[in-house]
Amino acid sequence: MGRITRDIGIALLAGAVLAGTSACGGKKSAASDEKSSSKAGTAGAKPSPTHPSGPPMKLETISPDSGTVGVAMPISVEFTKPVASSARAEVERHLKVTASTPVVGAWHWFRDDDGHYTRVDWRPKDYWPSGTKVTVNADLDGVGDGNGRYGTRAYRHSFTIGADFETTVSVPDHKMKITQNGKEVRSMPMDAGSEEFPSWDGTMAVMDRQRWVHMTSCSVGITCDKGNPNFYDTTLPWDVQLTNSGTYVHFSNQHPHPGHGEGSHGCIHLSEDDAQWYYNNVHLGDPVTIKGSPRGNTPADNGYAAFTLGWDKWLKDSATGQQTTGAA
Image (cartoon, rainbow, N blue to C red; front, side, top):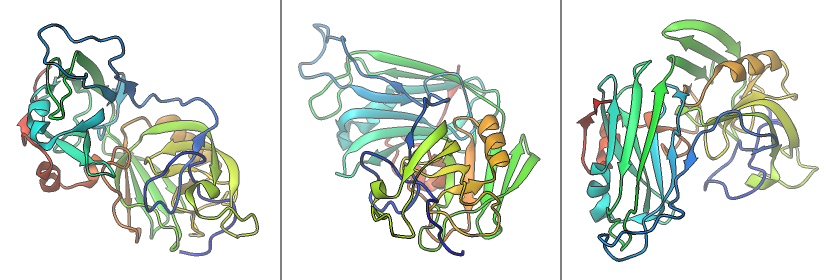
C-alpha cells in the first residue's frame, strides 16, 4: 500500500490499549461533541429489606444515553463486576427492549481479557429502521449476577433512530462512499492503513467525534524514538472515532491530498475539506464498513462493532436467543 511517513496515523496518548493494537488511537484535546454513553452506577442506592443479602450489582454504563443515533447503534450494558454464566439468562430477561417498529434482535455477551462476562449488547438482526423509537428497561432490582451481588434499582433509556447514513471504505480503491437513505451523497478519496499497520475491516458504528485529537506513536508501543520514521506526536482536527483501540476517520497534514495509498498507521485519512464535511454530517451509531484490508475484522466489542458479526455468531453468545421487540 505504499510507504509510511512520519507523524501519520494515531495512537492512544494515555492509558491501556487493546492487546495487539498496531495502529490508530488518540486522546481528546477538546470536549467531545457526541455523548456516547452514560454512567449508570448505583451511587446512593441501598437495598430494601426484601433484597437478598450481598453487595449491590452495579452498572458501569448503558449506551446510548438518549437522543438520536444511527441505524447500527447497539444497546450496550457494562457491569462493574463479572456476571456468572449461570446468571446471564436471568439478567437478559430483565433487560427489556421495546421499539415503535418491532424488530428481531438478541443480546450477546462479551468476555473481558480475563474471560469474564462484563458486557452485554443488544442489536437487531439487520440495521434499525430509521425513525424507530427505542426504549431499554433494565429492571435489575433484586436480580443476581451469580457471584453474590444483586441489583438495587432499575434504569430506563430511550433514544430515536435517525437517517440511514452509511459509509463504505474500499481500501484497495482508496475510496470512501457515503449514502443517505440509500442514495449516494458523497464520494471521497482516502488513504487507509499500510501493509505494516493495516486498518481493521468490518462494520463499526461511530463511537464519538472530537474536534481535535492528540496523537502519538509512543503510547501504543510503535516507537518512542524521535529518529524513527514511524514516530509521530501531533494534534489533528476533524476526528470521528470508530474503535476503542483508536481507529479514526480524520485529516492528516502529512497526507493533505489522499487517495494515492501512502498508508496510515491504521486510520482513514481524508482531505481537510472532506474530513470537516464528514465530521459535521456523521453521528453516533452511523455504520462505517471498511473492506479489503489485510488485517481482518475488528473484534465486535472494539467499540460498537456489533454488525461485524454474522447473525449466527451473534446468537451463539446469547443466553435467551432471538426475540422480537414489544411495542414501545
